[in-house]
Image (cartoon, rainbow, N blue to C red; front, side, top):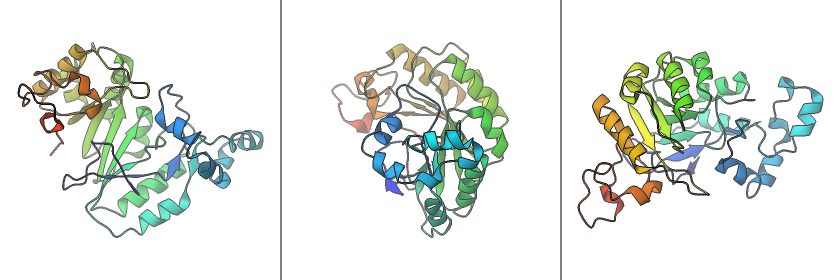
Length: 267
């Protein structure tokens, strides 16, 4: 595990949490993906050294040899799973597969099941799971009690699918990560939150390059969450919007510190 600066990844005591990557690489193909950039630069040699973690038996031999030289092709790190299975620490909040998608394209179900089994061995730690492929969640539902299960949503189309699939997913906490928020959400969000059982919404901008959502988009989401009784976590990368009272009701005139930012967690 590694300490993370992702601000919504919290230990149960509210301190900053951790990341854990038993699977790396992803075939979702998001153009703004930070993980792919890291895999092709700073982490390239480390990832390519794991040639035997590529899902060889899921593909043709030719495809296997072609893609084992791609550092961002899905790879399994069995030693990391084994270590988590034997982990005895408690009280951690652990974002699982921030350099991949546990339920993503090209990730064998066997890998996902092994990771979830290791999570079950750590019932006193909280594991954050986040996917862009919510149609795959039902295969692994119900999730262990210590899993918070989320879906990334950038637009109406993704929201519609997320709501539909989360409704049938059983997890202690279900959440939406609206990051990057790329367009105005026109669906009835308060109804969607109730319908899907979502109890937490994260809002953030695109980074590297930074692309901010319009402030009225974020305002409407916060208002819908308040109407539905859903907790809201506004990421620090929305600093440009931080002076808006509708988003930050506790902010006083002249405040510039992050102590005024609305960053709630579900109970």
